[in-house]
Length: 500
View 1: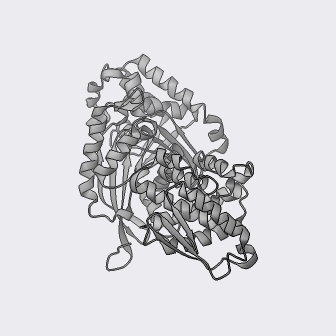
View 2 (view 1 turned 90 degrees about the horizontal axis):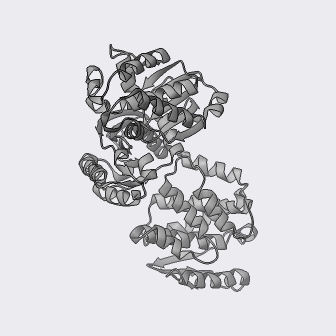
View 3 (view 1 turned 60 degrees about the horizontal axis):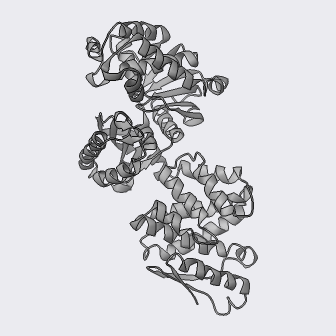
């Protein structure tokens, strides 16, 4: 990482594409601690433009316009030090791939959509760094525009994660249409949220917590209105009831301007956010909550810090998955080591980068997880397990790429799957990584007996040449036969494998 002259600081940036607002955070990291340099928020309201499962043209345009502005602010940050994450609306919209493609081009950096539980984990990480480093169990809640995240954790570790499909934008549009406020609308919103909470109430109450922390603009807006001095961070159930009575006495959102501590851009979502908040307090039997300014964007920055300081949660996720599915660690280690050797010899010519090396290593370690289901077609089972698991630290993009590498590590090359998901350089990169993994797997039964063979690999576009020591192939006829089979498999994917 580029560092200042004191060699102890660097600059990182996070962009959070929320359903209500887009947030940009640029921060200086000194000795592992974050100091914000620039924070920007734009009220894009993607969720308001989600109609019949599609982002409408207005929402599309609002999002792209915001990202174009953010691009100028990110030009001074190293590309490897930026992470952009999309949340609920980009998870739900059928045309999200189109927005992600155009948005990535407008921003000049790839957008990664994350799962609800991964969003919850990152929210907790952001909040935990704003609180005392004690042993208390905490329930952290974040009301977003399209979803609400719930996390029970201790210090910086999450114990329980959930994401529910209820948010202040979606509930506003459904229960408070056209800016109208009514008692019946409020009660319908409350009941709907309470019904959603029944899905998690039992398990969360069984785990328990010592304190409750609210993270989001909704909770902070409620706290400012409930506490007229504008300084308190405390929300109580009694205070919520008083606020509900006030709000339900009005007929329209416009009348909420009476609350001096409420920002104008928060008026339209206060009734829906309050209905969700009261339902949360009642369903989980919460009496009091304090608020925090820590949120998803801070969590993304701290996640980046971990990746740069060799505390990458993705490594722990891979290890946990290997344990869960009883992967043979010796076999996985051998395949990974050989894959790394092949990668090192191919990296420059094939224009591969560090993230490619990480992805190849993870695929090598997980290539046999499907054996926990059945030996027949275990590569297909492995793809399913990876693609449909909650993998902490991974975006949907990374998860699908990892699953596809495991799927394609043996037998017939699934070129159609690559064609369906990828194009251009992204497709070329994954195909090349798949070739390296396939070659590494071919030698996993040779290494335990006599060690990894001394093989030289040279690549040139779609051509790949393996050079062996004299008589090595003659003395290993089974491996030679497998390599000949691999020549045919790779030819179907447009690669030419030469054996010397």
